[in-house]
Length: 388
Image 1: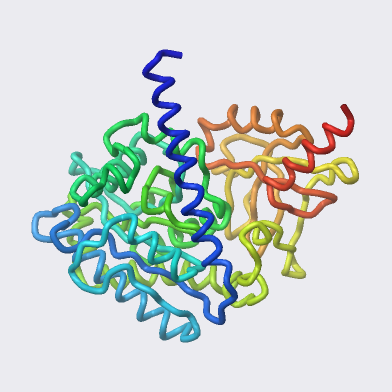
Image 2: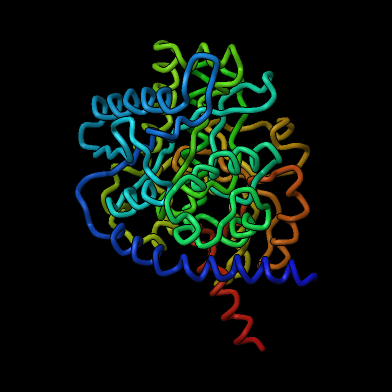
C-alpha cells in the first residue's frame, strides 16, 4: 500500500476512535427508560443554506412543509408518540447538532427529509437511504452533495475531525463502521419507500445506502428520505405542490406507522439496551422461521439480501437468480442466501454477491433463534479458542 493510502487508513482509524466516546455517551442517554416513543424529524437544510434549487422552489421549504405534514399525521393517529424537530423555523442547524438533538432526546427513530438534485435534468424519482459505504455511484454522489453543507459551518475541521466531503478517502469510515441498528434502519427504509411510491406514483429509485454524516452520528435506527428531484421539472412540480407534499407525507407516515405498530408499542423492547434490541424474539404467532439451526450451541451465519412485505415466488426477479431461503419476522418476509458456522466463509459469500445485492448484510441464528450478529461472532470466536 502507498504512503498516501496508509495515511488515509490511519486518518480514518483515528476518526473512528474519536467517535467512540461520543457514541457511547449518547447511547447511555438513549438507553434511559422512558414512557414515550420518540421520533425525531429532521427537515434538511434551512436558513442561509437553501439546499438544492429548482426553477421556482428551494429544497429547504419543501423539506419543512413535508416534515410538518408528517408530524401532524403522526400526532393525529398516534398521539402517544412524541415528535421532536431538529428545526421548526427557517434556521440553519449544523449536521452534528441535528444528530445530537436525536441522541440527547433518547429518540427511537430518526427521519431526515430532503429533496434530491442532479446535473442530469432527466434524473427523477424518490429514494430512501440508510447509512453505508455507498451502494452506487449515484448514492455516493448524493451523500457527498448533502455532506457539503459542513464546509459552511464554523470550525468544521475540528468538529468533523478532518472529514472532507469531497474526498473518497474520507468515506472509508462508512465501510468500517456500520449502523448498530442497520437491520431496523433497512426495515423502516423499505416501508417508507413502499409508502411513498404507492401514494405519489413517483419513479421508484428503491432503498440505497450512502455515507451521510447526519446518519453516522445518530445512535438509533435512522433513514434519510429523498422526496424527488427538484432539478427535474415534473418532480419539482409535484413535490412543490400541496397535493404532492400531502401524498409524500402520507407515504412516509404509512411506513412509519407500520414500523411503529411492530416495534413502538412494545414498551419492554424500547427499554432494552441497544445490544438487546438485536436479540428480539419472534413475536407473531404466524411468523415462520426457516433458519438452519446448525450444530447445537454454535451460531450459524447467513447473508440477508432483501425484505418484502409479501412472500416472493422462487423465480421472482428481485431475487436475481439466487436460490434464497426466507424467514418471517414481525410481518416481513426476509430473504437470505448462504449459511455457515464460519463467519469468514459467510463474509466471502457476501462479497461474492455484493454486485447483485449492495445492501446485503450478515445475520446470525443460534439454536434456530435469531441473535445479535456481533454476539454470534464472539460466541464463535470463543468456541474456536476453546477447541484450539
